[in-house]
Image 1 (cartoon, rainbow, N blue to C red):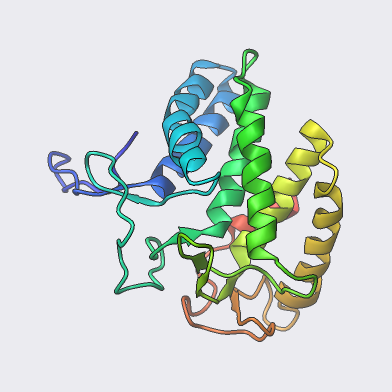
Image 2 (image 1 turned 135 degrees about the vertical axis):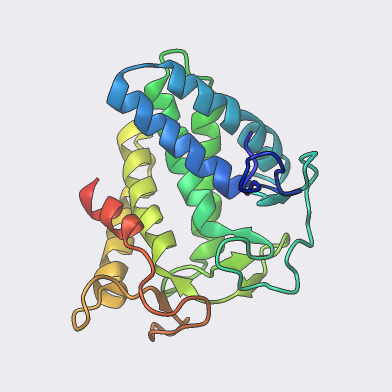
Length: 234
């Protein structure tokens, strides 16, 4: 596992460990494995994913805990006074459940002796994301964060979770033939087309409110495009 932030001379890591930074490290290692053909990178990714997913996420009923101290003890109240933080919001981030699910599918593909828990975890994370994030047929996007009882904390509907949702639905359909993922894939792309595409300003709206109106609760402007780009490309 890696720490998130270090001093400029790389000697003093911050007394914080986060699932987000480790998730993107897994993503980077998988990309490296695919680009080089060297399977050791995928095995390194598995060593990061296993304790965070097969231990911590499983312990939470296949939901992703985000914040830990330097001994990897869960910090349930981390940033409770800054609940709309850009990168370390309080509680649980549904979009990361989807992103981790896709990466677990990618690990299952990359490893010839992949452990069975990868697809178990990917399926459970995906299904929990769909049920908690989109509890009704008319839900537009999913809330940014929920608490440990799955109650909405920040109700902003950011663009990147639904981008990860279509990617994960596609990956699960291809790998497992998941019965409901294909239908959700079509529903979510329709929602992207209707609500998130910015046909006036270009790209996607970075944030909507629960009624589908452009909002700036968490972000202003359009700070990144990589999730939308990946969803469109893959």
